[in-house]
Image (cartoon, rainbow, N blue to C red; front, side, top):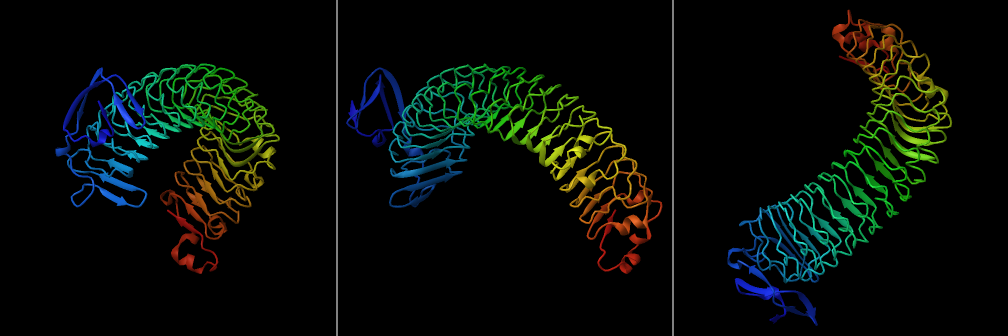
Length: 526
């Protein structure tokens, strides 16, 4: 049997058998062997465009946009214009796709069927869509996909299958998608992937596989995907990574392996990824990092080893790294930091928060520049680290976080040497004393001292001209001198619990505030 366009079939149901489908001079030849049922149900489906159409249709000389949202009944509309370029049928509770619904849409470049209830896709549903570049099937109820469902989409660049119920994928399902660049498979329940599934995806740039149930990855799975730039594998159950898994990914820039069950990393697992910008391994039970894990990765911007079981950081971890804008070791089991760990580096944000660090080596920051923020919160520090002041000329950060430690007092003049400091967080410590002029930094604006053990403030610790906010609530301050209140800089606010005060200083009285010099507008907020 021969015919020119399957989309022109007018019969409601045509049963035929075939072995293979080929195109010869534009003619479709169907040869017998396997039964197929074409149920068009055209009489039950509403017209897409026109006076009674259920879609919004925009017509132009070279294209037609068809936009269908929340349509009734919940069926793919019929008579979609054959020159449609963009077709959206979304949020319409469609449960099935008629096999011939899109056969005449040979100009279609984008097909969006997301947020429906589609459970399966007929094998030939996308048969004639050879111009299609974007196919969106996310947020449906797909459980199984036929191995050949995407076989006739040679120009497809983006495929979205996330947020379905897919458990597995055939090894050749993407075999003909040689122009695919973006593949979204996240938020399914995929537990395994065949080693050859991406073998023909030489142009694939972005791959999303997070929030599945993967336990392992075949060593050869990315072997031919040399154009990959961005892989997200977080929120799986991956326990180990083959040493050669990323060997050919020379273009890789972003790698996310967060929240898996990885315990051990091969020494050179990242060795070939010279363009790597960001690597994140947070939330894995990794106890030890290889000494040369990051060796040669000179393009790194962000490194995160958060929420793991690290007890020791290798001293050579950042060897030959000269600049890293973001480094985080948040919430590990680290008790000490190697003295030469950051030697010669320029760091934007450094976080060692949430560990068990009680002290830092005095020369830790020798020849080290930190230019945005230093986070040492939630540790066991009992004294302000000398390492920060000793390297004060290179400590250019604007934010210092020291909350939730065991600090009891403030070293006189400590913050005055940090000339770029704008905000200091000292809450949830055991600080019981502050001295006059303790906070006199040239750019200091915000001071957080709440939840400490302050009982009185006699002198004025907050003499900096740029101070705007001082947070003192959560203490048991009983005495607050007039010198303190009147000495705070212009336009500043002091936040505290007034209920604990034995009496309000005279300067806080409303009548007294009026006779203060007009330029003085400091206020206490209770």
